[in-house]
Image (spheres, each protein chain N blue to C red):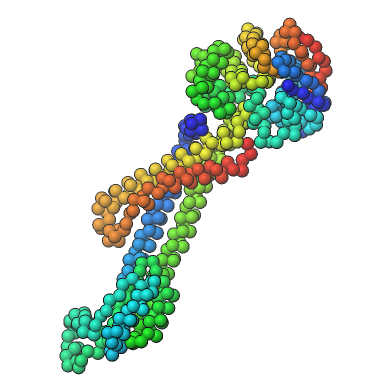
Length: 289
Length: 220
């Protein structure tokens, strides 16, 4: 209670420097929030692309019902496989005709059905790894009744590269921003501490222990971080409300599909609190009292 | 209560104390006197370990403060009340908060300390100034506020460094009355002063410092 009272008095006493810190941290946390939304959406779009991915297992014409059943069971046994669906020869031809209805003449005089029956394999979200898919494809290729296996190897590798790149860049960017915000709080608390050196010295001479002296600065750091976080939230709400809900998003197609989860929206508040406290802790850690 | 044995203290090129030996027993009211720069403030600072000696031994409340670990210094200081020469009142806090600080440092609950703070402020005649900021008080009032802060936690030892340095004779006499009152309750009081009027006629021990040593021991 005494620490909180001292912290509030300290914040008021050095209101201008504290206001600048809150603004700096608010801007930093706002950029952090935007970066988080970007990373979240990149991940989301990448996972959507993964949902479209499938592997086609072409079957021998002479495969028996029993052979088909055992093949399906073997494919399903893989941990990565989500769903499978059988496409008969007739269904494959019908599908092709539907797709190529403008070139129907190509099918005139066609003797029989040259298309093989197939099994379409879709994968579970999160378990789509090119190495695993490649391994499964080779495994299936060796199974009886299988003519060939096809999947978009390059497409899959491309998605993987996008996800890995986006995650790495996102993490690096977020870490740099976090470090920046942390440094702002660290510097502020350090400056405040030195500006109140006389007070700190007096407290020490009166018999105050290290934590009695440090507590108000820690509370101050946490409160500054919290204020910065709230500011970032308000700014995000303003931008989101003004631009996205206000109709701007409808004129930029990609924004229409973007997601803004509320968990991320409020993240700057606890993040600011944590960063503020940690920054203050680091700033005071090396100071001899 | 306080014992110095051959204590030496040196500042860069200046010898502040060159072998001071003395003892203040429990419940005593003792004066250190001497010209400016004689080492009075240094001696008091050594007692509450604001500085460390370059030689000799110091015992406070039976504890050897020279070999004391840094972590135990706050505990030692909490047993001592100090009236600083430069007051050291915190400008961002009211007189009430400045005085209450000494109790908050000792972990006293807010409800309990209020009565104690107001009683001490009444004792030094500053009850009506409890909500004032230090800078709005006169020199004498600030001095009394510092005394209030020093005695509010009822320390076993009270140190006062030039407590009447900037005060008129009447106010100085009032301050001295407070010290005598505190001393009569059993607190050991050590006062460093160059104000002869303060100790003359008190019948108390007066140690005169000169050239970093105790030159004479008389009775005031």
